[in-house]
Image (cartoon, rainbow, N blue to C red):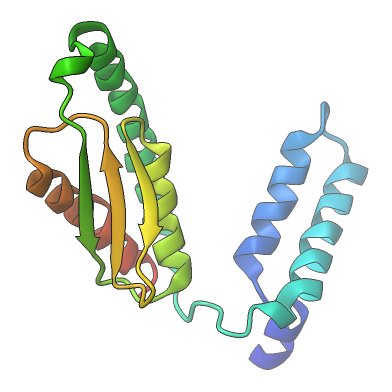
Length: 166
């Protein structure tokens, strides 16, 4: 029965996400648009599942929701910090840094989420992933301690992503 379920819905969370996004993109809610969103949510993952042979084995939705709240909070705080840096720190006194973050994550989806989280947070950008996928190169706008930034990325984001995708 489980095999039939995953044949019909190869990525159930993606199906749910696509249906919700479709419904939210409509100007008004109607039953027809909700049904169409569910149909799209079934067809798109099913038709693209051939290119996703190694889907993540485990995914904790509850932990993903708490991770999303942490990321949104960090984005808000980082916006204020970057605005403060732009307004108060002269260009000559900026201390940008390139930081190599060694990764413990193995799943490509988790690494992609980490890189996306870093890039979404103002003041940081993930620039490159090593060929083996063991290190992530991150640029920071202004920091006095690059090691502290690396440690914060590992404890605040990577640790949570390991829990989500384990």
